[in-house]
Image (tube, rainbow, N blue to C red; front, side, top):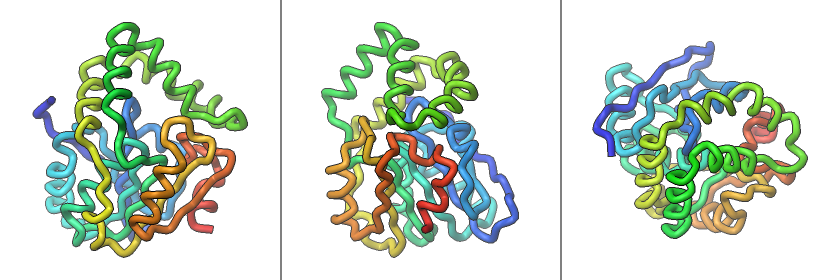
Length: 231
């Protein structure tokens, strides 16, 4: 577990409201490069999962940002939910994408073994599993823009740190009862986050639900994602 603080970058895009984009395991803020949402973006440029909640609150207070929305993808959904549960007065809307209630311990231990055996081989397989068979354009964009750097830059220490966080990460519906705006987005071809869990969370939270029939684990790479999210 690292004690280094998370760092954030505010990207002003001419909108009134701001959204925090929280990436998932083995990625970073660049995974949101093609995302077009009607917000200014607050991006973690150095994400430390065990410190995220405290560091984000400190950043918001320093910048006098009274309220933000949160967009948490995959394991970033745990971070976004944890912050929202502890600071509901700071959160306007919570958007959870490709999430699950928790990751099973046996699966996390297996991932750790695979990483220790051959980090690049496992990451390559993991990234490709994020796409459905029909997402050829999205997969091509990822390969051309992010794959090489992710394989090179994601060191074993940061990956294990992320797995250690996931061991104890949970989305607890009761802790989010104070939020009025919650939306869950799910790709029906997702191989990593089961549809059943996403639907159960949606029902427990009373959240809006957006189901994308052809999408995998990275539905927001679709150029029409924003229209589908708010359509």
